[in-house]
Amino acid sequence: MKKNIAKGFNNDFVPDKPDLPITGGTYLTTIDLLNWENCLCSKKVINKKSLYEIGQQFNLPETQSALGQAKYKNKKIIEHLHDGRMGNYEALLISNKNEKFTIILLDNNYNGRVFEISDAIISILKNQKYKLPEKTTGK
Image (cartoon, rainbow, N blue to C red; front, side):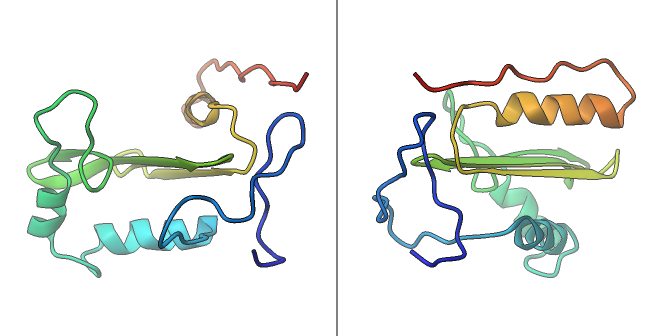
């Protein structure tokens, strides 16, 4: 692993193995992900029709589209959510075009809390009551 990459670890501070079982993995920053989201939605990467097509979910339970979860109005993307996890790394991108916000969370100590954290951030942005998730501790 590169020296400038945050290493994943569990709640007992045991680091992930250096070579996670994944091929073709990339290490992205929040700026990388924000640039990607902005380019996707501004038709710099693909056109509006293609963006709509890859955002369509399969008609099966618990599946996502190639974009993750996408909502459209008149075939224009208005909401985009994509999450992923490998080892103790976790990432979440939530974008709401109508409300003009994008939230990107990157975590190297997986606790399954990024959705709760993003819900709290959205509530704060909307001046609503919020609850922060409880801290998870090791043994």
